[in-house]
Length: 354
Image 1 (cartoon, rainbow, N blue to C red):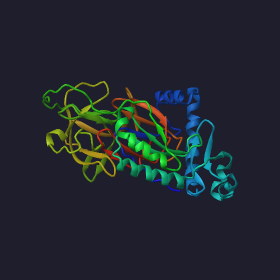
Image 2: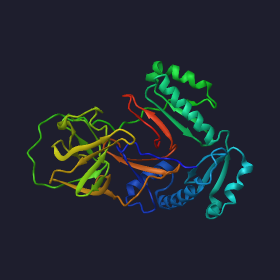
Image 3: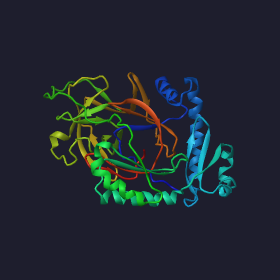
């Protein structure tokens, strides 16, 4: 079984946390998340690395008609394998690739295979389009407690979404409808409009997770710097200008807003490339000598994390932390890696990490 994971939102740069965590404030956040002493975090992160490696070997062996994916539990130090028939577990335990991880494996009996949930997921997605549903998220969640397709909605859209929800009741299994609490959105940076100051010669660094904004005070968070030939480009989201059809060049010019900073129009450059699909991304060219591109992510005031070729873990249950202008630093666990989203403004993303 293979998952195709697309990072649809670079608004919040995600970091994989290995055992070499460098800032105690991140350790504190993870300790609170896991409800453990801070001193245990490095060992738990080392366990996560082993669990992720074992899970990557495992996912190549899972027959989607028998299994429904797997997830890791760092505190339990286990890889939980969701299976509809426990007598078939020997296809995993007898495979030589899993020998180093046998003591980490735990099988959980579930009712629905991934193949079955994939079918329901596809049908539910079609019904959402057919009934013009709005502001929803559809995901496959294989864990034993859920083991179903989950549709997340907002009560504010009930009138529009009722026909869609009623139509899903004919599916097998019937999807679970969920109304999660509204979470803080990493959205517009609200700032007063002034004319740009005359450029100064001071050099500023732009770090991942800081803020950017345009002349209309519409903004978002920075992602990370990339190099293309001789160009230095800052990655963010393609919808950052607010209006997804924005073509006014003056409104595609972006300025730097560090955490705790002030509104002084530190020019970064213009967004020269932007897409909404298949991945929501935009590229801002560095055309100011006052701005310095650097491979660092802001981790807390005065603290930084260096980017060193890390990738997002493709494992349910893995801990991921993010840095953003509005939310600053927080951490959580991945609970689904296959979902479709449509937002209140009717922009949508497919095959996303949740």
